[in-house]
Length: 161
Image (cartoon, rainbow, N blue to C red; front, side):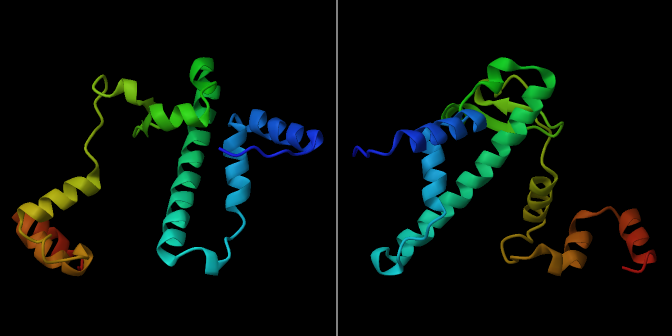
């Protein structure tokens, strides 16, 4: 790790931003630095792509954390509201279908309903359709014939599909 000396007034501004956003100073600095592109001749394309992918994933995670904090603030959960981004990186699990942010410590204590897209993919796989098709929507007729009961197929056809 390298030491970097910056003026006190700049350091205080960075600390204020970190406190306001409930983030670490390092995280705030990382977000600031990520906004500047690295000159192309210094970064191999694969490394640049990976850096962009990681930065995109980080932005999504931070937005999820913001949503979680809004919920915790609304319900008055000060303990979870005080978690830093680094702590959430380690502890956060998901936002459930009811919009409740869940931590990894809650895994196994609540039941998450099956994801409809996962159910669709599983049905396609059972029907033998998913291995050959990258876009199931292009094969809706085949999927419908393989998985839907007869009365639903007739109704679907009557509606002009």
